[in-house]
Image 1 (cartoon, helix red, strand yellow):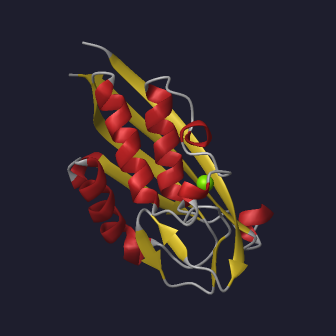
Image 2 (spheres, helix red, strand yellow):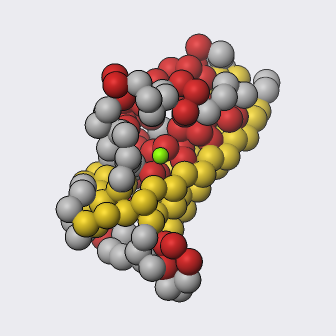
Image 3 (cartoon, rainbow, N blue to C red):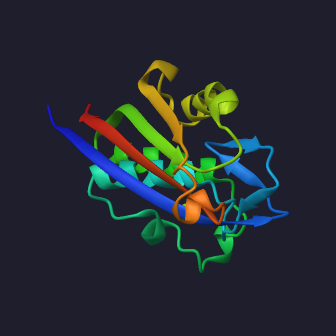
Length: 159
Ligand code: MG
């Protein structure tokens, strides 16, 4: 049996009047992510963690932000592809853990919906998906509300 870990990190600028998607869930907010895709920072971090675990490169390699096919794309489609790519290499997901960094809005009321969403896309049970949130105590770009960041770690195992 082969067990591997992967980690991913992603950032997006935030601007007023844009949608904010986190983990495939629309979040009510006065600011949203600037991106070529839907800007779902959490899913992007998870995609990179999954790809990294199987040494399959990164999200920018598989889904270039210069490719018009990915303009405004629902990041759940990208996550589905990443899960398929590691399955083709003979692995399946064991668990995901993640943290989203943003100052506002509070994510706590949305965590369960985000886990439901990630469970539906990855096929993992909710009990195997960690989603945490933190502010940066008003420090730095996330603290000033200029951007959002997410980190993820995954474990994959050979089938
Ligand atoms: Mg991104």
